[in-house]
Image 1 (cartoon, protein in one colour):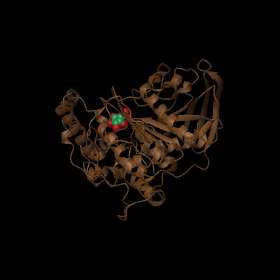
Image 2 (spheres, helix red, strand yellow):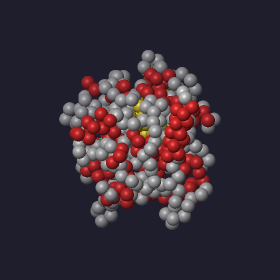
Image 3 (cartoon, helix red, strand yellow):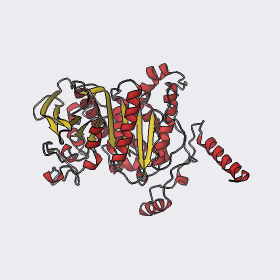
Image 4 (cartoon, helix red, strand yellow):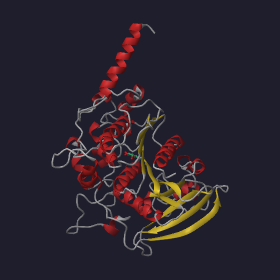
Length: 457
Ligand code: GTR
């Protein structure tokens, strides 16, 4: 390379570094690294004129600062964050996005292990199935937890927990998994008349690479999300809402929990169970979720600090993506398509994102100092990969206040080049919306690293 070319390329790197390093609350769009394919942007834009898929059309916005308290004072030390500001941020998300769920473990909740096998999946695993009755009453709503733990190695086992979309029986072809009897969305769990069918056994197994998970020494626990609250809008009459709703003058309030709030609450009830199971390492539970269940995993992890590691896979709007970017799915769009997911108050921010007292970087900051990993997919522009990355980046100041690195870089990485050096992990992978073996391998790498760092493994 000639000297002049060398000089030019060094200048480009320097400029990129300068623009990539943000000091103000104003986000810049000059990150390098992954960029959406222009053909994909053109074709998606043609399909839906009202959805923005163009980076240059992202409006200018200022993000709220997680480190400025409600009284306007700057939060300058870890103690002030832990003692006051963290609770304020959590409360803002409860009030304006996900709503308020009942606090703590229900008094009469019971656990019943209805299946235990020591040598399954070719001898590689132990299988358990546990029914959690939320009120302890017969015929009341209950959820089934399906658990696989490695048959070799020491106990207790670090375990990943995630909700699934089609019933526990869809995650593996193991014929002993109880076939779900809960309501199914059309197209899920092989549903006929909204009920699961035998044909759907193992139909989602590619998203649950059990053999690899067990081989790396981890356990897997999963629950059908519809056991907790069926995913359709019925005015909160089914699932766990009517059991615990606090009505005022017979009415639900603007900050009453929606379905995401209920699903996240269910994950905490699974955590209550893990605390009673000597085979599961309750200090090393990772909560994970894909898409709407990625939004749920983030909200569960934000509220319940018993989850040691929190993972969002392609969660997008209302999950890891910054709402103010209005890129792909927007607040107005999600509240119209899925009016039951968030609390009623969130609808005030339809086409009015700048008035939100929070943005999703603050949700990620609630995981601090615990590790969190966020993924995007190259073709999943609906979920706004860059908005997901930027939320991770802008959660960084909270991690740094607590004395640890967030992402450890301000730059959007290249495709399939995970960032795993800090306490916030991120990747944008080839392909579309989905949970893949590649994603899992990266989650396990991150878990290996952080659990070992903390001297727990
Ligand atoms: C879409 C929704 C997204 C995402 C996804 C999913 O229809 O717009 O927010 O959550 O569903 O859960 O699969």
